Image (tube, rainbow, N blue to C red; front, side, top):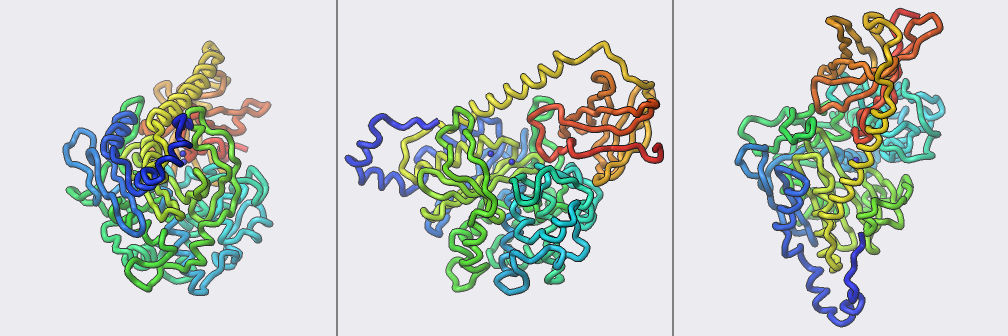
Length: 523
């Protein structure tokens, strides 16, 4: 978004060799470089950068591998990566600064700060607070509305916020956790509403500048040829390859920051310092706001992890304000993952140990960064070693096998000899969804082509699957394919079409299940 094997005599060793255990807990793993190389090889990651901060000091800041597959230029500690949803903590920090300044409060109603703000349910529109925007408990479904931002659309931030009013909830307000991006965009727009300064300028001037995050930017449009930045990589039709940078300017408060481990180290130092700038009496935000951001706001269920990852079973799990919260071996972990097209990242803080870890990668493999993260954390905790690489690899294989079985069942039960109810040209036309907008289906040369009006890259052929269900074959193969199913009226006219992801592994931001396209002008 993401197995405990303790030595038989580990308890005895804790008592017999306390000096050894204490010493082992003071630094990063001795085999860190080799471990990272193995993880990158196992998960097929071209490039990675890692930072470890301990007691306010940067212990490790190092790059591994290459910025771009097939090119020799190495990653270093200054190489820029997309950090995705790790941006959310910057947005909440900016709001925390405004709370400190008395310009707003966490529990201010959103409509008072953003006139015209409206959700589907009038009660929610009235009761939604700034805190609610940040805690994934709005009643919207997982990733609902993400097709307004990903793949890149022509909608502006204000357009996106306006369209929230058309998104039907899937649960009652504040009753259930469901990760979303659109309300973080909304939270970001509160900043210019209150200060007159754009979210972008506020983050640059009030966070990046005082922290000395000189290279960090808010858009990959800032990258120039020859610059020190990594290229995004994705597995397309089974093969890892370089893909286009995804434009997230309209979703920036939710996930557009690009940074390096050298710069992110400064961010981690301030976070672990509870808002205090290093070597200074100045603060980014108060200790009170730090506690607020790291306090449980939305409780998450604590189910059993994959069999190979039972050592990660938690006693509690929650979401704070821009941070995920959980426990591990008696310590509270404060962290977040981030993912944008071709990049995934991990930031983890262990406040009790004054320890922070940042891992940035240029491939979409969460197991790669987590297998390194827990190897590092275990070393600082003085725990017996676990082969986290093998554990996360097994979890990935288990997930992929389960998905393959689902797709196999779909194929086996497919009525291959069935025909569409209508001639192909009768499926053609303009269709509209209440919150997305319009999509067009064109017929020609025995084919149907579907295109989403506000998403330039979402153009693809519709291949007949069975009955009145078709399967997309997007021309941009980084976009997850979908089933498109038409429903007919009694007179044979098309009533609407729905969509659903083909693969259970499709990213939740492909929220096809949330759209309902009806013919325009054919009631």
